[in-house]
Image (cartoon, rainbow, N blue to C red; front, side):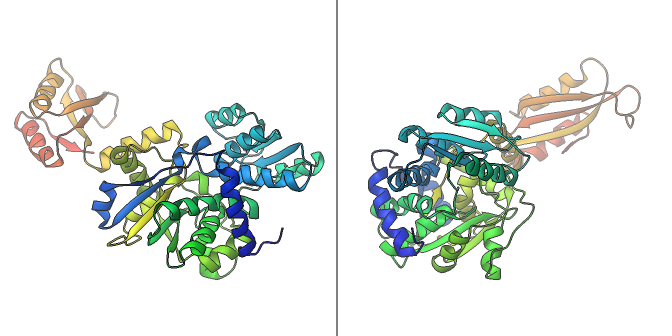
Length: 406
């Protein structure tokens, strides 16, 4: 097909009809917490509740459906370490096409298992996505299979654009829509749909500071390759935008802002605690932009697309632990005690009186900087509020123990 914006818009409208019986129409949920924090009306488009756990099924299914109406194929190939893999695998199983997904060798076992669970054959190859991508292209040529690009394809873009139609139907007077950006497929489709339906809406992309290829490209007015993306938002850690997506974004997107990994982690934490919403780091980018005030939501109706929820459980645990420390709800205190029976008991009694809940206790008797007969003790505690910590340390000092927050 030709790749004009009007042609893709026609496909978006067709994709909405094709996908209606296949996918979930995900909720557009108003967040009272984020609205209060940001001074506007904040809505979350919950694509983390989509089949396969992300928006990717939309573009993958429509691409395959459309291809099957244009030519006969029996096999499709994709390269991905996560959401696109699962979207293609699920779409192929629904449409009776064999799917081969090339995944980098470091891909977590859970993601490999999920992709296989949707019926795909998984090939592990290379250390990076780029190596897996080149392997997938080589397999396509050898097998005469159809390659399903994760973002730089008009049909994939059209499928993702159905999110824009749903947002408009649920909130016609939306002022700003925040969209996570990696290669640009999602924001391209959403921008095409919403700018046609509501030309006054502002479309703002959000990228991680550690993977800013699209933002740099827009700034330079040409495609810029960012060689070493490094961010916890691995789903959008793309070295180079697509040619098609770049041209669409350059024409239709109003701005792209950057958020750092600490801001992303805070957004993941807040979505989980305040909204009971599990988001992967890439899915939380829009909320990160709001909470860090990179985007002004005051007196505006703002939609943040939560694009996926496929977060590694170990990463989620680390984010929660880190944010509890950042928020001052858990702290670590460290001090040196005489290495004799009963010494630690006196410290614990003070902590109990202060209503501090003990999470962990670590002893270190082997530290060469300690005098003989001494032990360094590090205690992780939950505290009712940070203002109690000073009094807690003062109480310990009164019984002869010098502790400090670490």
